[in-house]
Length: 477
Image (cartoon, rainbow, N blue to C red):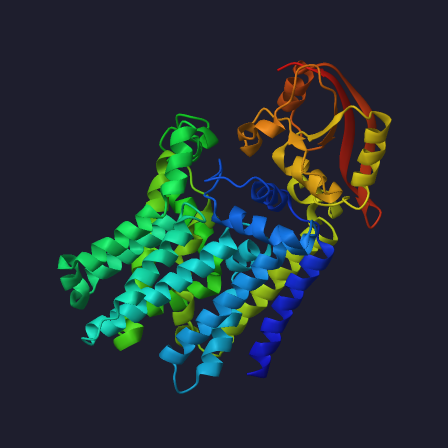
């Protein structure tokens, strides 16, 4: 077990390096600000993760406060892996647990999306917990001793998953297919309990529906239309691209074990777990592949497809070269990811450009420079040119009053306290990621925009990024 434990320890060390040396990413601080404005839901996502960030803000405006939830959900996910290991391999649960934990952390998709405080770390934990609840219920039901508490508990946890991120719906559809596919479970279709449990999970989405109803269904419209630029011509090659990227992101050395899992017969609890895992995998993957034709679909939306598969993969990947190829590749990619976001952006060091990574550096310098400019203009408000840079700046300065001045719609547009008043002046943080269109839009919104200074950011002596501090005078609503 020692080699597997060492691998898990290395992945946890990488996480620790990221959380100690890496500044919070723009989306992390954006969601933090949601937590400072409790609401029924939000423009980009449902509310549960933001509510929890609001709770942990009692620990103060520190990077660890943002990311402490990721450690709690990782611990919860590991606990569920242990429960699965005891059921699936009662003769050697420790080995099964450590293999499952290592396989999970070595998956680039799972490592990257749970490394930071995005919604996915909570979504993954809740989906896996829902799977355990439904499988435990199904186990008792098929043996003639149903415990309905597990069914309703699964419904509550599933409702929380959907209340975390919209793609939790795909996991729920997979659960529904699971009950249809298991012949022994089909009599449940005649039971009011199954339908009441489904209704309970749906009813938990009422806050999201009310928020959308009171805001012109703007969140639904954003995900179904405006984020893709409105009307979208069908792209019939998109599903293939989506499937390839998804397969690579989960780990190319897991594809063959996954196919073996699908093809090999199983018994009892493992058979039920396999049916559920394949149902979720199929529903989620096929749904998003179809959506990609007409709208577009990000590969990481399909993360729910694989979480129920992970506890089942160990016997199909074995302890040989295939396992260690997966773990080695995972460690290498994890090291690159952490280096890229915590130490230095890789692409600029190699002569390229990666504004999405480089913008996360310089936060040990930029806030003090901005504060000095604010002191020179005491009547000015604080802003950034995008929600991400605005909240990164505001978080670094521990200021809840920062605003985003952007042509793109974001959550700031729904907070009355964030609205800009006519003729107000602003100290605005801009950067290399601003497009010419955004610069023109900003200039049109003020009587005068003056660049006060440029802040170059370098790593290992190599220039990687530039921030700019602007004085914008006379806001025009």
